[in-house]
Length: 354
Ligand SMILES: [Zn+2]
Ligand SMILES: [Zn+2]
Image (cartoon, rainbow, N blue to C red; front, side, top):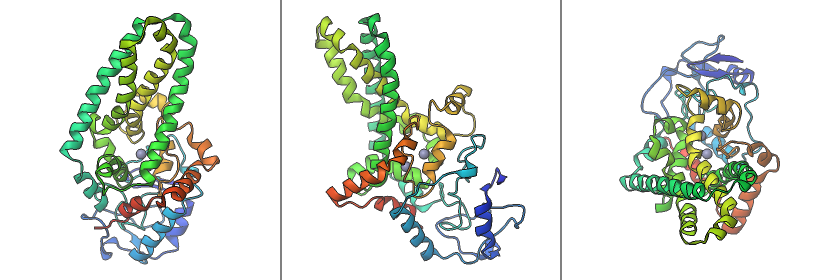
């Protein structure tokens, strides 16, 4: 495997494919889907630096992309790129997304992608307000519920709280997968709901590192919002139940609180999995120990057509769910019931060239 940190990783398969095509100077080719010319991304010791493919054919490439989106199995693997010591997803990422087919000669995905630009411009003031309100409401409820639980603490529930801590993080991982899969696979940004809640998922596929340029509110607002109703209902119970009733419900309340904390942290963990400079040592430790989503693990999801490894809290459930074909089966059910085709809208944004 040849590694060029600035330009990405090339393996044997890439090299063979590259050699089978005629190499030409990038300046001779039309610029597709990008507004600025940057230097070409792939290089290896046996090729000139400024190169691209002579047989680049936009229509053919669009057809190939459609085929990938409609028949996403088997899930891609990183194979010999699956090296945890590699920096994960730099702007010209080494996970196969930087290729010649959809944006030759510059990186295929990134802030220069036409779809990414359009999607980023759709982040509205109303959305921002919703995210700020969600974070404030959830933080107040987290603190109130936690203080009430500590006030009514009974040491006899230690064991069950520890059990629920593990169950909670596993539940959060599964929930992150289901929400992520649902938003990636169905719906469109043409509706109010889509503009508000599906748009970030579309943007993330065509510009994966946009997330590291987003602030805490934009990254975490929607996840905090999901915690508000469950926490509010627990808080209501804490305010109205007798001491005996609260004692009976204590383990469940701890479970929901811990699940809520993991859900609230999920997109921050996801952001860290895209961050390859300046991460705290303890975050890197948690990633390497696979207690939270590791960087190299999440790279697999970002190989087009983004149809596997949806779980983004810990990633523990990705492999078992892939083995049983969970996501394709779920898509079959949804299509049978609603008639919606998987990844139709995502394909539209992925292939938006102007
Ligand atoms: Zn995705
Ligand atoms: Zn991601």
